Image (cartoon, rainbow, N blue to C red; front, side, top):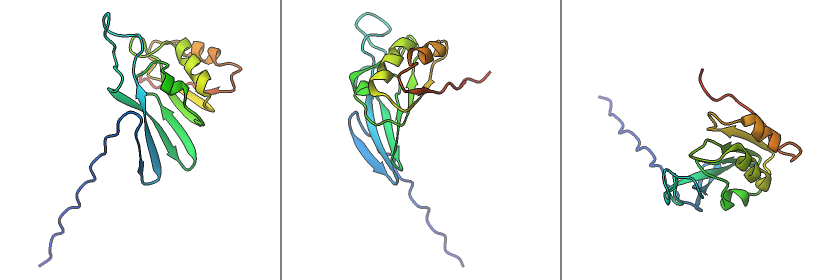
Length: 145
């Protein structure tokens, strides 16, 4: 009679908060704050309060990737360094318009930026605002038609 092996326990995900980091095999994961500075559903309320969620910097094989999460052009984003590829959202009213997104990207100067979560935003205006900055803008149609 063959013995059944008990299944291996699944690894439990580790939650990390703003400013924390961890290693997961070959990836370094850094949690970057994501929040609104001025936009919200009503006076005195923000769509995303500081501490509610994260953007992330993922490092793998010496390459650094930034995923902004739903945020505005916050100081934590503008202070990023050595980003190879950035994914930056721009979706009013929840995040920021293309001009603010471009201003934030100019501050941290990734090598390449992909706008995402932009439905209804003028991504060409974002691209134009970054002309001459040295940041390569890649436009992708993420939305199903």
